[in-house]
Length: 612
Image (tube, rainbow, N blue to C red; front, top):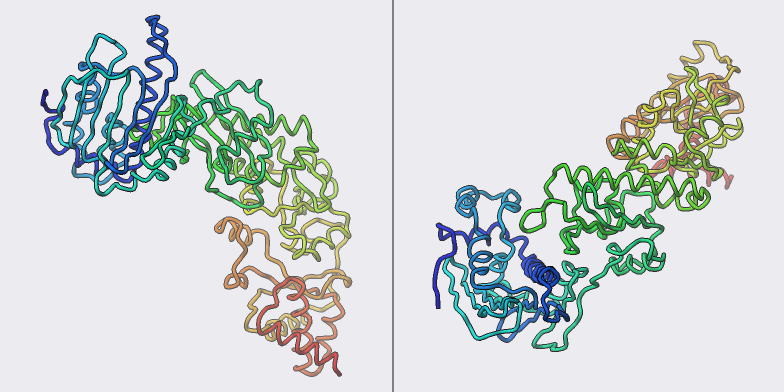
């Protein structure tokens, strides 16, 4: 038996491999099965080129778990290796540059900077194995079979052995710390994760379950010609990808391009309600049908991380563990291509069947909004198919809505005002005031609303979005009719002082006097548009917290309401306080702002009044 050293001058290469790749320990199986797949593909290629007479069929990969002997066997009937090829591919290629590797990384903690520099696929075996055997027989029948072994040191053994069938068998002697990989279910789970769609059939067996279990679908839908697929095929594949998904996908996009880069895949739009949901079932990245990761940062824009599906490209640069994407021109171009395909699909759906598009809109709106906010190219296209819903469930594009309201809804500066509500129930009274004046009100209830309207206003300076409760409706929309105050300046000053004096400690709202119609409410509680937007921009559309709300709410006092004259004429201070508090409580109650002690006191008082 020949004994020699692997082509590396330092003896501490294996501890470094184990240390830096440890958190990716499970990828050893993917790497070895991928190598077996490559061996079978090479055999097919050579068989065609060299016109080998031997019938090459039943090409497959077998994974066998032997718990009794604490080994895992990965067996293929592919091209195999000669002695010279073992020397080249196992003893030399894997450790080319190993000297630099050791010097550069042995004292560093960053695993991500190492991966991608060295061909450590086969040697990932030593993350779980204390010893590795290779049995291999080349397709060249006149060459001997070779046995190779290594115990995780730079020393290996190699010798010729009795003739074997064509192909390679790798035997891993699992170390003490990695016994979990001797469990059948653990290996089954890993094969389903990494090898579910590999292009060569894979079988799993064990000493406990001798019957071989087929693992993979070798011809997944994304590799097929889209013209040959029916809707059922796409939906079946969706559930194959995500077995826990009970509902069907709404629609999908089949990606297929071979220049200037190669990429195939299917992206699914599933139902997403009104929230940013970075779900567990994310888009999966494959390379030649080998699962790589579901972290596609950089490959697809952030907003498409809300989708599901598969992307497969051999042109996306990966590190040796195939787990970390490296950004380059290919990646950027792929990202642009995917963005364009998504925007083209949505635009085509909108133009082809607008009614159907509107029916799906509530489930995909958040994705479109996110894309418009975060991706310039998508924004330019999406402006044409983004639709607004009114409170009466009528749908308009931005240009359509602008045309509809341009003569009736303008502010004092001449801007077209897009009135909107974020909550039809809580803002009902404000909506009613707008409807009484025949204004159109949109529903914008997304957590991304404030960011989207900022973007749209920058793009169209002649429009302004204003939430319906940010001021009195006659202040939001400029009206020719103005109301003069029926109170003198002194009466207004006295009224303001009274209200400030008698507001409870819990409500430190700012007070503003306005001359409104006698038919309007005595008090109006608002949050000015600018202040609310600033708050929402910092909280991604979350509700303003109870501790912060006093800073933003304003009370508008209608100086023309009859109650104000009654308060001013009331001689008793206690009665004045009661009138102010009662009116304020009713206003707070109508806005769902009366809580806790004040709500309890208010209800008790009303019950007492009823009992009198």
